[in-house]
Length: 70
Image (tube, rainbow, N blue to C red; front, side, top):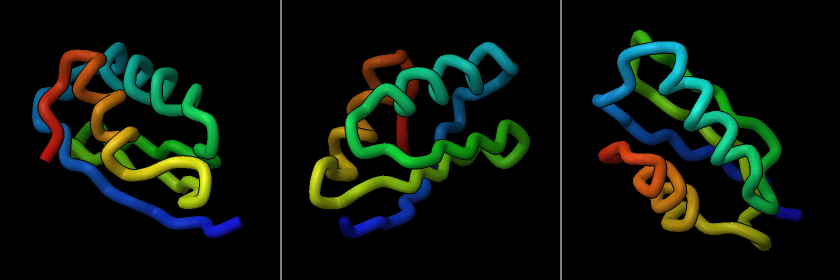
């Protein structure tokens, strides 16, 4: 198991519904250990297993939920 943290900027997050949507979708990915969403800072931090998941998949999951990721 190789655990890593990655942070994404999601400027379109504007409410608790956005936080809940992103957290729920990313948490469902196989290999995600923790999802921290900072609404005020527009930041999503994910701890994940690099052997089961990659950053592009996490980014794509957030984008598929309707958000632009930086």
